[in-house]
Amino acid sequence: MIPMSLAQVAAVTGGTLSETADPETLVTGDVEFDSRKAGPGGLFLAIPGAKADGHDFAAKAHAQGAVATIATRPIDTPAVYVDDAIEALTRLAKHIAANAKARIIGVTGSNGKTSTKDLIGQLCARLGPTVATEANFNNELGHPYTVCRTAPETEYLVLELAARGLGHITQLCEIAPPSIGVVLNVGISHLDGFGSIETTAKAKSELPQALGPDGTLFVNADDPRVAAMADLTRAQTYSFGLGGDAEVRAEDVDPGDGRHSFTLVTPAGSARVRLQLWGDHHVYNALAAAGVLWKLGASPEEIAAGLAESGRLSERRMDVFTRPDGTVVIDDSYNANPASMGAAVRALGLLPTEGRRIAVLGLMADLEELEEECHRRLGEQARDAGIDEVIAVGEGTQPIMDGADGVTSTHVPDQAAAIALLDNRLRPGDAVLVKGSRYRTWDVADHLRAKEETDQ
Image (cartoon, rainbow, N blue to C red; front, side, top):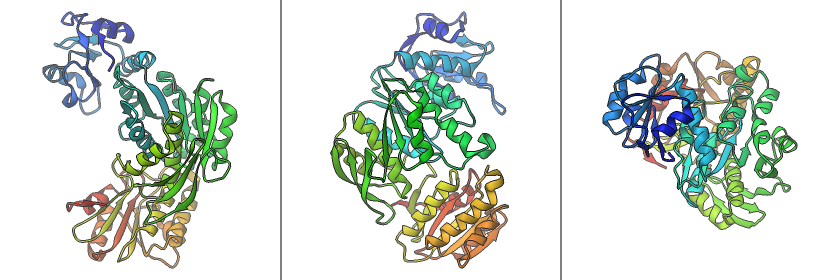
């Protein structure tokens, strides 16, 4: 965090200091809402929750070195009293973003936000001190929390921008206005919140519209809805993709073993890249990241070297490991939608294995009236990818089996049944993909991980 006195914190947040708080005390550490992470010179954010009230842990945070707590009710340790803790954090983040020297980079899209943000963060860190959103901590709490981690020396602030409806990305951009924006794609996901893919596109377009005339926008040339966003922004726009018209593009793509290689072409020249990440969808993610780094002044050779050394940072996302018994597991169970499901089964199809390729597939949630069609299409993609066996887990997944006509398929009622089936069928040398919307296949993935693994 940029150092501030408690008096300044109170002024920025609209709060008042407790009698035990010294206005001149300097905040030099981070803002934390988990008392276990509170440290010397920091601020503790006390959030009332359904299971626990942060105010009950203020004394612990103070004992660990936090100089004050942002609180909404009286406590015994130094405090900045506010009406709403999240609003106070938001105001603090706005102040920090406005006074930081960091270039702010915003990333959005229906798929790949977290992986692309991770890539950009790793590449930016090669250029200078960088703060990036942890995991997918991209909501009304995680976004300002990340911004508040900006320090005086931070040169790059990489933010993942998510939305559950219209106006959400606009609100996040108002907290920390980006100078560089990336829109990856518009897909079928969370239709319960957006209602239609057109509304999803409108929500994602809030990032291009938030950029100023001095800003830079990167759009996916191969996604018509995203490419059209070039007409909605005042920023200078560049495209990335596989086509020859994209300023940042991949040529001579080689799928290899599922970790793709390609020639990266930029306005500054070209270089050969081999990714460490699994799946063809990462080609687009890498191109988006490459565009940002090109704009920041990195050479094609520097970008290629960075991409080759950048790995997976966030859990349950194309995490490929080999168990001691020889079983290869792809844990991509964090979440799922039609695009990410298709990418995952294609990655399984390319994965070298001496045994069978088995896909354990859970429900894709929030697809509304498209649920049956999307699951049937997933079965067809599994068949076309050369998957040997499909295990469909839970209610609503039966259409996967219909689509996977000709593939050995089994429907099980829940994760416990899937685990029992795998324990009975798995043989050394098999490869297993575990994928589903949030929580729907986590138990299966955890069971497969129970034995210590070796990273691929």
